[in-house]
Image 1 (tube, rainbow, N blue to C red):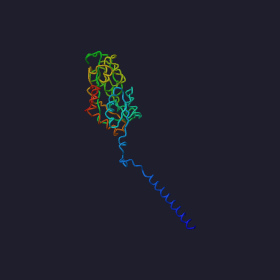
Image 2 (cartoon, rainbow, N blue to C red):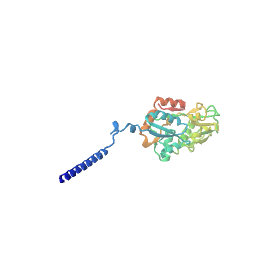
Image 3 (cartoon, rainbow, N blue to C red):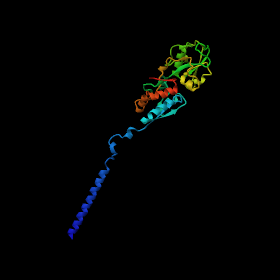
Image 4 (cartoon, rainbow, N blue to C red):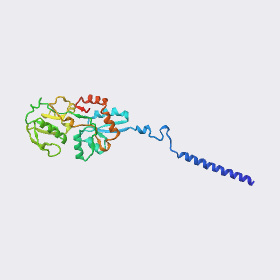
Amino acid sequence: MKSKFKLKGFMLVMLSLALILSSCGREKEDSKPVQSGANSGAETEEVKGTPVKIKIGCMSITEPIITFLSEGLKDKGIYIEPIVFDGNHLPATALRDGSVDGVILNHLVWLNTFNKENKSDLVMPEPYMYYFRNALYSSKYDSIESIPKGSTIAVPGDPANLDRSLKILEELGFLKLGQKTKEFYSLVDVEENIKDVTILETEITATARSFKDVDAIICGANAMRDAGYDQTSFLFEDSSNEDYPLGIIVRSEDKNKDWVKAVLEYQRQEEFKEKFNDSYNFTYVLFE
């Protein structure tokens, strides 16, 4: 009888030991990292190709550019949404504050002034995209010489574009500028008002709307076209147009991001150039 009890006891011990070993084996197996086929241990295609969603600020005048970029870059997994503002400075303010990822609207000289006045660090990576044709228009006179003394001329009133307009008026013989009192010429720097003109400072988006109300305006050709006027009917075109480049504007810490590089690359492609030129009819001119 004792031998039978000993045998049963031995079998119970062995069974218990087997159960313990089996449990430990399962725990060890469960602790292994989960494998996911051939991509295990390496960056998966899903991670590499994660879609990038970008918001680019603009006004209606530059919204088509963002549409062309969006169409061209979606195959690369870059999805761009235009965020349309109704004020010239608002997209840059939104970019500074982090509400958008980029801006296409303002030229480089304007941007540098914005950075100084707002203690921001926005940049326009090269290569630049385009420049706009800036010119003097009149609904009342058909030549520069026929614009009489005492005329009113509307110009954009922000510092960079006012400076640009005053230089044009000096070149045309309407006035003479003296020494700059600040970084840009302003009305206080007019040394001699040769033709006794009244210079009406306007918000840049409103300058074209003044066309019928004043004797002449200094305005971008595309803004004139959008206002319903003949953009080719200018009396004088600014010879310094190429000195005011435009392109994608981003925060300085983002300038080397892949999506920014993709924009800079795509803007040089023929597909983009054709769409751009068809839309703007050379009122905006691409840099080659």
